[in-house]
Length: 480
Image (cartoon, rainbow, N blue to C red; front, side, top):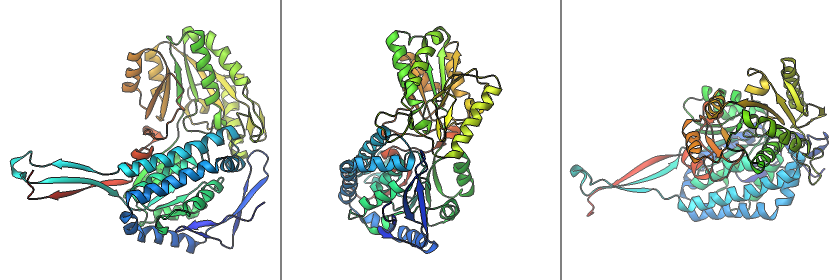
């Protein structure tokens, strides 16, 4: 292994007397060590975030945009190194790690572009006789320093979706990566240290849950951006009612193949996309396909295509080029997923393909006839497992999609424009994807959910709005 990785406090590398080893989820081999922040390091990071707000506000749009573009360019230049690090600590196959690195390049670039456009709005107030000669300038300013808590499944790009918008609006941020996958965030710290941002604007602290709870409660961090489980997210919200909390939580995303999606090319496309994006990242994505709803008239033609596509997915070592499905994050996750499959079968479900396990790797699994109250049907599996069922018509499909406490994104395979607009109006989700899987995400678009999938939005400008509030400046005595 290489020398232990430092963590980052106020833009500077630090070490401590305690080390933590990160292991590869596929074979358990050690990847690297990093230093764990001591209490005094955590306090220093919070003090720096708190006291640097004025300096952060004083940075120019050009300074913030140039720093963000530098990060984007460096990720691009080091993308292969970063992709291998993501695969080593997360276990996702290299093909997905490379895509994640490319997405992070775009995420920081979009933030740089939005930083240059972040200007405010002018309002004439002389629309009323009582306000003749007055004009308002409405600008948005940070609520204050941000605590960003990121999950393991996208150790670079979901960190980027917290760091980039915070820096774009001039908000200091303390980023807390997932304990299983901190190394990529620490490497991002190396790149951020090359910019000329005020040093107190950012820190990267790889912490355990106990230390994170103390950060969550700290009043000097008035904004919390959390991506993770609904249990933890809603606990944070309930414990911190005076803070501005943005939650991007779980889902059990549905893909509906409606009756008009009926040609051979249509069915082949849907089968290929659903097979891939129900199992990419080993299903460890909030918008991976979990529930497949197929029009009764298409079920017999579609299902064999889907099974064939799933069985063709290369599964194995994530370091092998061409592998699509790798391991889940750890043995505990594999145990849980395996038990959910077993429980569904015991309740009458049938496995159409998959269902087997090797260490932390779960074979891509398709389950039919799963009871509606079984965990694989109504909870977030967060593994390479999908259920399939028939629906009578569009009404039935939309009602089934909405019959979930989650509401992140849904995919609707239809050519009917009226159905597309109806889906947009009626489905209780944060995003509707027409002609493709719910897993599609462009990093600049608003992204988030409703119900137990959280609230607030990521996507660069949307997150910039979430991290800030309106402040009005009224000018008086103007000749308008």
